[in-house]
Length: 164
Image (tube, rainbow, N blue to C red):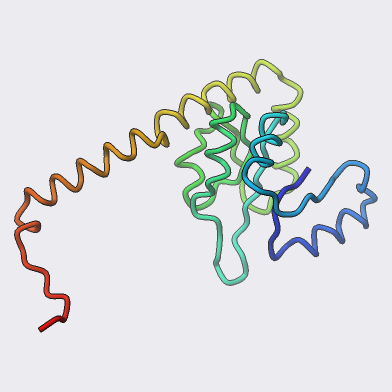
C-alpha cells in the first residue's frame, strides 16, 4: 500500500498498470493522520524511496520516517538529505542509493525474509525515535537554547524592528 500524493503519482500509476501489479500495489492517496497510524501499526516494513527531483527538490527530513520508527517498523529508505541522520544503516533500517530500484528491492527482501533482523531494526528504530524526537526532549532543548540566548550578550541587544 502506498499512502500519499505527489508529482510522481501519475508515473507510478502507469508503471503499476504496465507491470500488471494492480493486485499487489494499492495507491491509497492522501489519508488523515489517524489512518496513517493505523496503517503503520499493521505494517511489516516501511519503505520510502525518496528521490531528488529535476529541480533539486527532495524530502530533507521526512517526518513519516520518524513516525514509522516510533511505530516499531523497520525502515528501508534512500541515503539522501537528512534521512541518514534518522536511519542508522543496519541498526534502525536499511539505506540504498536514490533511484536504484534493484538495491531497493534487495533491501526490502533482506528485511522481509529475516524476521529477527526486521525485529532488531524495528526495536532499535523505536528506541531511536523516542530518544531523538520525543516532544519532551525537544521542548527541553528549546528551553535551554532560549535561556542561553536570554543570558547571553545577544539577548541584551535591543533589536531594531524598523519602528520609530
